[in-house]
Length: 323
Image (cartoon, rainbow, N blue to C red; front, side):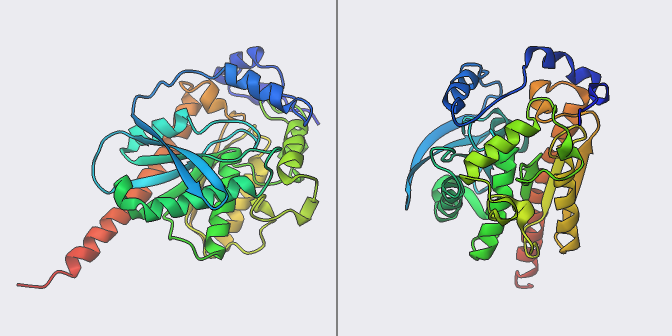
């Protein structure tokens, strides 16, 4: 099946003329990485930025720490960059933008990439950094009770897997999972998954990326921590915010996951942006639909931080002795 490009938002169309379909496989993944790296745009959002190498049980993991200010005990977001589990960098413009917009601390993880280090290496890196954030809360000047996790595309998929793994391992409490067009289903058997010509990230490329990340094609037997759509038990997860474009390969799998979360009693807000293709908001950030997408997830994350802070403050006040 072929997607009708007339359904794409007109503001998002012109850039596609400069973007040939991405083709990636085990033979060319290194060259594609190099090509994508050479096109990396310079940082736009100005924030306080530091890099730290964190020693974990599986080796050193780099993190970029973004902050707007030095306000004490800030809420914090563990950010997982996108890139199909194969590409990308923790030096992430969206991570900078979130830190600047919400005046929070964003810890962006430079996790292990496939195919050299397939699942579960990258996810283990993220889990280790989550535990490090909690243990180092005083040094990082963050509130350990105000930590969210999130990511975009493959990063959103990894965040969904991290939420599941953290729950099952009885890890630290999380106030939110922020899933921006998450890559969560290795099967793509939904209606939106049947189109072969999605812009930016198409069906063939996605199947190839999943094969490298999963180090094979396990189908329905894929780990729920790698492909969250395979999870059968969703109760007990942190509240979620999911957004996805109407013209995204991942649209229906993301919508289905949101519905299943709500069915399991997990609070979930879902936004489907009309005419938006995968990552179109980053390619054309000033398009009206892109601004709506950004405003939505920033509001959701900001509300999660503020709601918990207000609740904590109220609880503290109620426990004060009367005079």
